Length: 275
Image (cartoon, rainbow, N blue to C red; front, side):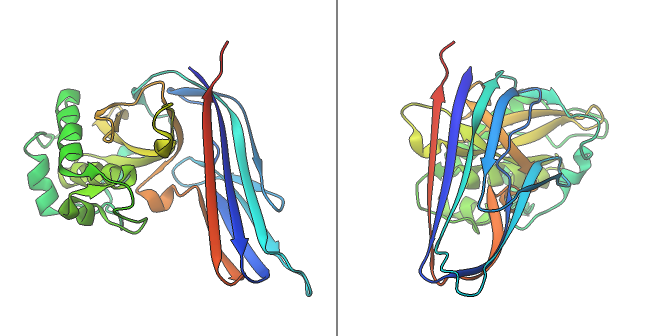
């Protein structure tokens, strides 16, 4: 499937902005699951590109206001076309971190004994040198979806996996965090993935999140699971970034000085491209 994506982030300020440093993780990369036909980024200042520790493409810019400036508005645009391939099982490229990195706990997806006990209902902890069974992970994916039901505005970007699990509700970010934390609690490497999801009747899920779970550590083999839809990822999914949790994958992250109160409006449109 070919998808055209437009992602606009509009910032408004009640007072003049004096300084801002922003880092963007808004550039998808070609890989086993997708081919990026073209992509562009627009920002208020010159963008500087690099790769982060997880292999994601990141771009940063700095704004410094001059004396007397009255800048109260900022806009970041990302747009392009991606061909999705429907691949959910894949092997990492040689330059990416070893799977063992994703056993490391993180603020939003920490292992916990209660998450481990929950996970054992569905998945057998892997023995040394053994692989993890995909059918067990799919059962776990469905189990997490049942335990943490999708509910808009029930959490925020600081909600941890354990908090969402105890609440029994969350959004796609929380469901992905719970799956990642359960897998880590069982000794299975797992990572958070940010991206886009195309569904004509689900515009709220255009900005989406899911998880990669390692099937074979030695072979660097992974499977991508979407808890919200209880499935492996498919042609509807576009990968943006991956990391230990949302904090490593936030589409835009930064600091500012001045500006007073900030309001942000995000608009994402995804349309299929007819060949």
